[in-house]
Image (cartoon, rainbow, N blue to C red; front, side, top):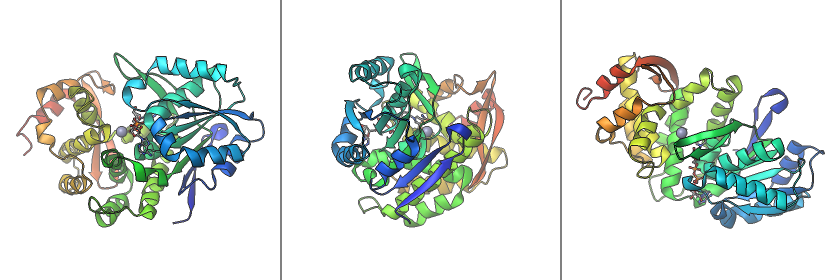
Length: 366
Ligand SMILES: NC(=O)c1ccc[n+]([C@@H]2O[C@H](COP(=O)([O-])OP(=O)(O)OC[C@H]3O[C@@H](n4cnc5c(N)ncnc54)[C@H](O)[C@@H]3O)[C@@H](O)[C@H]2O)c1
Ligand SMILES: [Zn+2]
């Protein structure tokens, strides 16, 4: 694969590029092109300290080389810090550092820092430009694309936020080499999701080319998978920017996944692990709606190969089923549920909660 792949998110005046690169050789030039001549020299690097320690040097050098006068603001990754108080702190620091409305924000890290930094960019001085530099697989294939920014409240995740599109997403797949294996696997669950909803070759490539645990990952394969996944998400969010229709397909595996996360207190499982389980549950529902019956077995084998959990039967407890009833995507007594027709094709069905409960009641499906 080429040294970098460029995709475009076609949102008219707010269109932007996603560059999937290996290394940061083109970062300075891409930033200069994306931000144009009107931006100021003063800029902030809002950075996850782990990502900054491991990958900050090249990023700083590229941005300074492109003429920016950088102030660095560390923001811890991890869900507990994704809160309004952190946004206030970041905005305070931006003011103290003398940034103005022409100052861009560069946001380096995973989805937590990305959501938070993006939201700070949406709010600071009623909105400034920002560039995502995602360093987790989940952030490269999902959270950095689509312009959803925000933070959690005590009452729930992502309850405060804004749609605010970045000016550029620059995903350096070399940063993924330092991810803890569990975080990498959790990101792969989202890659599998794209395979199921839109492109069967993603599944085949993972089945045939993903290495066994402990073996090195082919950076070419990783770049291909990130680029293809990002292209699917970019396509969906372009056609459905504010989540009225097609964007719902991105929720494949997420209805049950979110219920499992809520029921297990958001600590036992990573989001992608819960999504892996949710995708198996969704396959079962899909069969009742004409879906290919071999998909569940195929996914089970693939998820196990990727070191993701597959013991869905242990999770379909009453507590999880009760959480389904509080799903955000619920419409009265029905849920808009994403069903897979076959590998590479999905659609939504409005399904009664009571029917889902019956389908998921332990033993009923085995
Ligand atoms: N905005 C959206 O559309 C969207 C979509 C999906 C998920 N999200 C959000 O994304 C968040 C999860 O993101 P995440 O999984 O990236 O979590 P995260 O940002 O907490 O990162 C996970 C961990 O990896 C570390 N890390 C980051 N880059 C690293 C690297 N290159 N090497 C080693 N360690 C590294 C971080 O310090 C952290 O400990 C959630 O808050 C979720 O709500 C948002
Ligand atoms: Zn997800």
